[in-house]
Image (cartoon, rainbow over all chains, first blue to last red; front, top):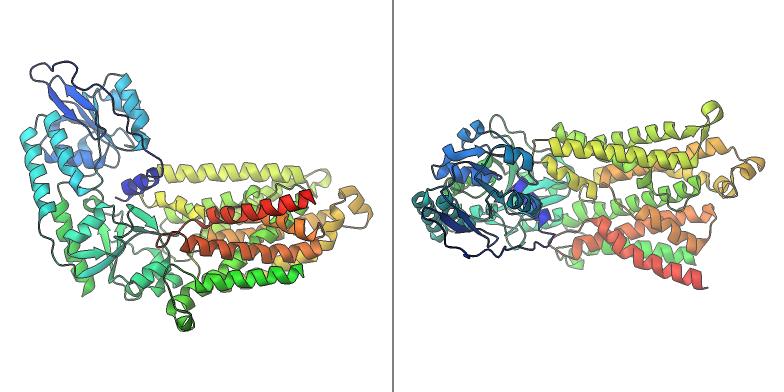
Length: 301
Length: 315
């Protein structure tokens, strides 16, 4: 979420033409080769599992480490801060509209690209250079399992990929706890931007026994009026914060006069979602849901 | 008659802004509703004041530079305000009024710079219209470039939302904001209204105006400063709302003619009505979501303008 969801939200305005390349199974793959279909429907075949992987999204970086292939990661984005071991991997800069020269300089035999119109040019350039790339969509929980399987196969960690996918499928299929708290996720204040039903945080809220009062808004995030927040009257306002460590600085808007029309703001029933655990769906989903449940319970008291 | 119709339109626009909203509030409960008292009412009034300020400022600037394309956002003020706001957001200032104040400071800074660049000629007293416009565009572009550099180099993910501020909107409306604007706006508004007669003469050209006894340089300085101050305040409380300052003065000119005495009040009331109406549409059209009001001003205003333009050019 946050930067990613925001960018995707903006990007969603553009119609994304999935450019499925028609290279499906024309030649038989040599022995030891691995083949996957990525989230654009492109078939990607590697002669051997990848040993030099560059990841262009924080979610993919976390996935590579979770599958035990961290040692094969030779490049990450500036935004990849989890697990801490990822920080030891050289950064290639931004993951969206990446610097292709920096990526190529890492001499990758596989690049994990985030699915976004901003990465279309990079995907084409990598193809032109003959560097295999898979495009992964990792915006919602149910997409992580597929991504885990794909990365698992390509990194020679098929078993780990399958078991992570199974664990996440079990989490999604788990009976949901009764929704006790009504929450609104406020990501920006001028204009007020909230998290909608098409987001990972909305899924986390459900897993944590809460209801996102803006679940009916289909998009990942949307601009809404203060009046709407006030009348939907959430019990708690959740605010994502950048600072993972140290004291969290309360956002200035909670002291603005017009925000006092919202009961949860007046009562200062706020929770701060800190760190990347809430930023993108991945192996930490269950932990994130538990943390959110705890935070909401504390704020609700 | 025309004036009465415009005033009625403005009153209707403000009433609609109070009655309509994303949540349905029965007419009987309007007076007692908390949402109406603390959110809708100040927002409707702020929309009217900001719209009026932008349109009046646009009318003043068009008269000053004698160019129909002049618009408050062309004079670098919006760029400066955006830079100020983004700096305040980047520095994590925790004061709830920091962003509007910084935007205001940025707008004033840009205004001062453009003003200095616009002074040309003997003794450095003349404010040259063409230079002023060019300086405004240049300063605005420069400020926008710095803003974008800060936003794209920053590590803070929140800062990426800072650009949303630039799209403009009246979500920051409160009685405090309305009070601030009411205390601040009268001075520049009166300064502009008082310049109306002289601007009529200036429309004949600078030399003829001088011969007819108009102190051209002080007049231009006064109009420029007043229009800029008005725009700076509007941008500080509502972000960059385009179109109102450009087209409302033209629309009013089609109805009221080119004399500034009737044109200025008409532009103020017309701009206010347009923004109040547009903000209602922005809040209601895609509820519970909200549209950026600048989009709606164009969607509502352009058809009206085209209609007026056709009537005027065919008659």
